[in-house]
Image 1 (cartoon, rainbow, N blue to C red):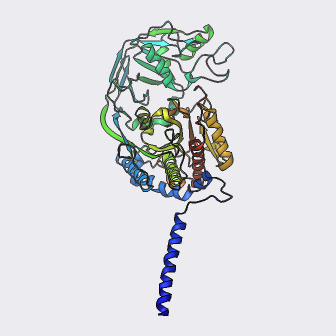
Image 2: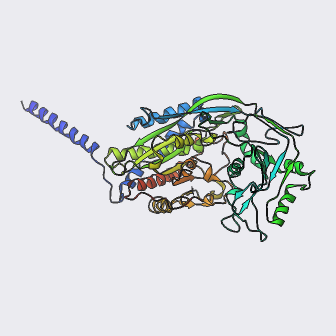
Image 3: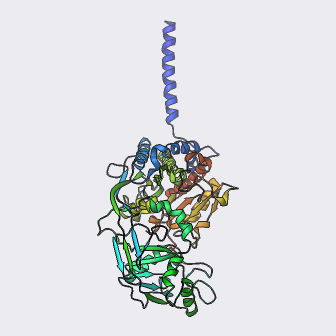
Length: 538
């Protein structure tokens, strides 16, 4: 009897002990005194070890460089959606984690261009970017249209008829007699007319031109950087023609090719043409009798790709309709010349950061401390093809853009660039003050309190020749008036090469930057006041 009583006692004790242990495992966590707030508590869920675990898979050869629309990208999408499912997040796109969009892959390597009977070779003599639908171009003349600027202080199209004509424009923008840029924000600063070629393309389109020729004064160096992109068949969004804005064809020539065209005219060269305008302080145009024939000869292939969404609904009934978006592109450039380009930094590093941020927000919600506003973690594809996935989302949003209050975009945060070889504790921030001074202040405050990184704003400069502000997925939100920050560690020697592999990633550095993104998102998602858009984009 005694043994039986002891046995029963032990069983009861063990059962109660198990219950207590189970309760302790599910009990609400609480920050210690050192962990003074919930943001700090959940930020610690972001670890270098877990970032590496994800990236060793996503940037492995099995994923074949994750080229948009191809099997490797599909495998990566499956991995990401399975992870979101494992976190316990419900699908938010009609029962799916995928926002699927249509693509058209265009092999343009067989394009043919002839000037006055002379055949020019693609890439060696000229190049162009995909996106326009024109298959054939013929003209007997080219109109010189100054700098190709349409502005109240300098308008090359004011008294010039270029309707249905091919237009050639100078690079850059005009200066006054003192050598100051006329349209710049300061005497030594250029304006948007010197940077993004799309600004001059838009001006030529509005003037009625049917094609634009632009000059690249850094032709050979630039071609060296983008040759693989040009040779790898590009893609565009495949929409019905009435949905798709027709884009003006733009052909890029080196300076010597343009000088050859001008040699037999009174202008003689690009330099003399520009000097003439500088001396007169006004635009100068002319018409050249040049026979130009262009044939695209493109091979078209229909494909699809996916953005993968993880939606964490906010807890505050009055604020949950407002959405904080975190983006990173998970596609890369695939296989080029038989070599797999794993894209560990570009943008495997941003992708795994987004996965870790998703995990932290989900755990916070499961513990009863979820964000007041909703958070959308969205890994997008098609970035390497021209920001296509984020463009599709912006044009076909799953959640209204008017409710989207910020986009925090992570693209390449796992390495160091030559400017920071001596100290890796940094991150470039781009765009933080372009639309909202409050966003910039929140970012600075979060970094000062939690991560203490060196925040480098070099590439946020309006005259940044790299134009990084326009080159990642945040821009499709920014152009719709949504404040954004682009987190970036800079370009390194393995950029867009098969040597961008996961063993070269600095995982501790990546973790710190990821925590900064999380803290910034947490603050925006939980504060009483919606961040204010108080800057007109410059």
